[in-house]
Length: 216
Image (tube, rainbow, N blue to C red; front, side, top):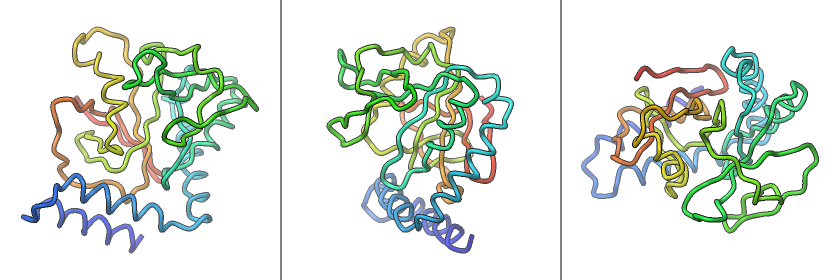
């Protein structure tokens, strides 16, 4: 907890500093480094707490088609959630680089013990990547992130894949949309992220200790 409070204070100082380096880049660099310092035991403990909290939530219980991700770079591991989904007979999907538009993501049904391959970013994807499901067919989309704020703004890794994939939500308000739930450690909350025109805001964030929902 002490380390978490320190990193949050440090990030706030970076946000309001006048240093020339882009604040989003500094926040991304600092929080990614913070995630990497977590021990294996700390990561397992945080993932288990998140799983218990999320999978018992009304949102999760009423969702049947749920997109997860394979963790990397210190992200909260969703493997306990994926295992629980299989026990509950829910349909799990994983993001893959779209085979038609490689700047966007598709979502592929992930079955138990299915073979995976690594993509150009060394991220595992289901081997059968051509049977892709669009995001509007999902009930719940669990997104990795580097930082978030109380207004639902999300700072990702910088590739923009999720924002481009979900850009249809800005164009047609009546599209069916999955609930967009960011997944993060508590210490990844910062104050006042600047929203950009192409950013897609989150509906909520789940951490190892709480689930937050943002008003629109």
